[in-house]
Image (tube, rainbow, N blue to C red; front, side, top):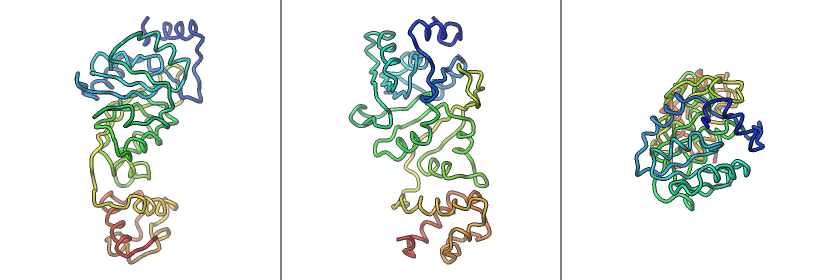
Amino acid sequence: MNLTDINDLKNILRSNGFKPKDYLGQNFLVDEIALSEIVEAANLKPTDTVLEVGPGLGVLTEQLLAKAGNVIAVEKDPKLCGYLRRKFGKEKKLKLINDDILRFHLKANIPGEYKVVANIPYYLTSKLFRIFLESDYPPKLMVLMVQKEVGERVTANAGELSILGISVQIYSDPEIIAHVSKESFWPVPEVDSVILRIEPKKKYVDIKDKKLFFRIVKIAFSGKRKQIKNTIKETEALKLAKIDPMSRPQDLTIEEWIALYRQVEQLNLYK
């Protein structure tokens, strides 16, 4: 059966007693072009190990197995896990794990370098960014299907920056590869999506205290539409960082945030 054919998909779900679960974000991708774009963006080689989050019925898993050396698929739903075990049988390149990705131990389960390629449950998006990008064991590449709004926030420039955008760009270079219509899924979700390619990098290594850096960012954004002088009261730090106190948090560049962090740290503020 063809999992990108909605009728075949419904038949598989029906015959196995499955019903898409909203609380697990189960919207199945039925667009062959989008599948190809995900795999192409991952630039997979026979030596690659891929971590797939939420494989569902395995439509992307099939594509990953055809290109990568090994696929580790983490599926929270035990019934879907059972189906995948039957579907893929003794496929030697696939390691299927029934677990919650939020509790999954990366280093214990993945030997060496890895890439994350997934059509992720959207309710997990922000948490997954943190898990992988802030990890001591980050992937060398992530290709993720995410909500269009989230993708745009993650890749935004100064003028539209958010806490989410800053938190991703501090650790990586994110890029929108393609736009995907909500009609590319079944059941059809309420929003369109994008394929997001994120290349983790050791950027801004001079930010020694990440906790302090993000504390500053969060304080500033507590008044997002207000001028930064209304939330960052330390005018000396703003002056030394050469930041206009009349500017708004979303208008600052990453470099300006780092300059502000340096001055706050040197002045021993927020300690």
